[in-house]
Image (cartoon, rainbow, N blue to C red; front, side, top):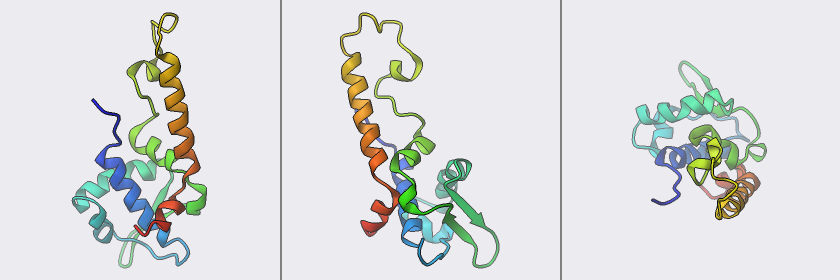
Length: 135
């Protein structure tokens, strides 16, 4: 098994990148337009739900409605998005729940170091970086 970010998370980041690129103009993004980053509008709605719950996006209903970011894309890290869509980063099961072998585990330092570095990297990148990549 490989460490992977799910398609849900990837599509969510692409959607948020589109929203980030509209930040300055204040233009809303409809689900239909946003669905071009995902498999379907219904699937995108499933992605948007945890993003709304995390307070990353807000919706305006009705004609001309759509979604927008709740704050400047320079202030939202990719780590925040990943954790909203995937949960806390844990490379091995025992990192998320505590390990009953931690006193004798020879790999604990390796996994904790990798997890910390991945978290730091994701914490350094923002939605503005994704928007700048011309999503």
